Amino acid sequence: MIRAYPIFRVLALALLLTPLLAVAETAEFPGRKIYPDVSVITLAHFKARRHEVLVVDVRSAYEYQTLHITGAINIPLADERFAGRLANLRAENAKDIIVYCNGKTCMKSYKAARKCAEANISNVYAYDAGIMDWARAYPGAAELLGEMLGDPGKLISKDDFSRRLLDPGAFGERVASSNAYVLDVRDSFQRDALGLFPGRERRVVLDNSEKLDRYIYQGLREGREFLIYDAAGKQVRWLQYYLESKGVHKYYFMAGGARAYYKEMTDEFLAR
Image (tube, rainbow, N blue to C red):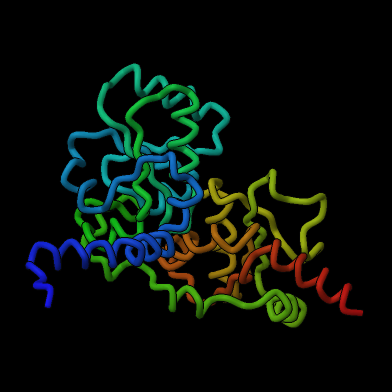
């Protein structure tokens, strides 16, 4: 009988587990397979190095203002000057740069890191676990609506968000059968000439807090429900924090946003 020494057992087990761990990592972080050339940093490693690096939030200004890592600066990936602004940041400081976005299925951190590499901006890493994992793990180092988060219980759960979603058909029926305030919060470049509900909806970009507040206060004063949609059902996740902070409790979002609405219309047409 061949005797298996402990060290060989460990090595054999490691060889067996390596493919399984790689599959698990790919499932949890799908972007790592899509962007294999991008260097990533883990949550724990990032926390340990936070005061040694420059932290850049590459999401929209609205998402950043809602929830961000304390000390992070906001340079949206969508900004046409993104590469130039990062190059200026690098010229001013030799520290490593960490870029991040919403979470494990968000590709913006990878895209930002790759864009930096293409612009010859060195030592840029993607923190791809995202803001939500950071806020849950280190609430004392995250800011929600301009104040320290402190308690991760303030974060809105996926279940609480899901309870506010209506599929496009149900959303449309509710628009037709109620006197709700209907808000189209898509960015200007995402809109068509007409909205989804002409004559019923009001348009406001989320960065225009003055106009948004005006609609909110008017709706609250009249006791009306809010029915809100965006481009793909992503932006409203952050709007929910703002609505709750303003005391709005009667509101629903369109699941999947305008994209899902058009898809449902197309599917119904093709099924005829």
